[in-house]
Length: 198
Image (cartoon, rainbow, N blue to C red):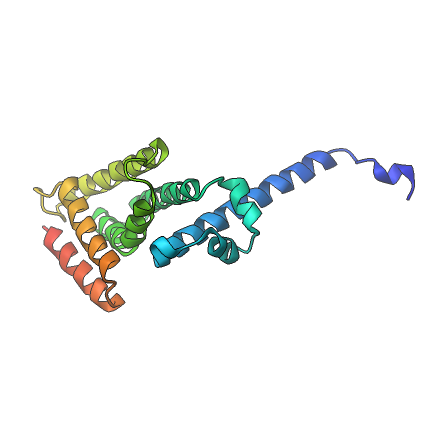
């Protein structure tokens, strides 16, 4: 090979570095999605090896991104809250206030068991500031959607975000303890949402 062929052309190192960063970001997203699925389904028996298998990466890649299982679970919780907040923001611009709130609450109820299972895997009292911050941002977004729905006259004016969260937590806890049939959960969710309607 000629010496000239061993020399990078203009911009090639930057292009390679950009590709490496994109691959690392894609791996991280797959790992977090797999962690939510594995720990949500298997609880305490879930393993980082299974997370790596589902994410289609090596176990070393998992630990390169997340040095401990606790760090992985905490990052998965942050991801869970951030995705819900992103969905809420998208719904707020795409739907009328009542339907946007109902759609978000359906998703929160359906994914609530996974959230509770992830949180239960962390040592008691050791939920980090990033999880708290992400959960707080989601709660503020839910409160904003609720206020909009109340102002539009489609949700009862006396309903507070505390009551909404209690209802979500109740159904989520029930699903985490004894998972119901999907149709049963849909009907139970419909009952809860009907109770909020003005």
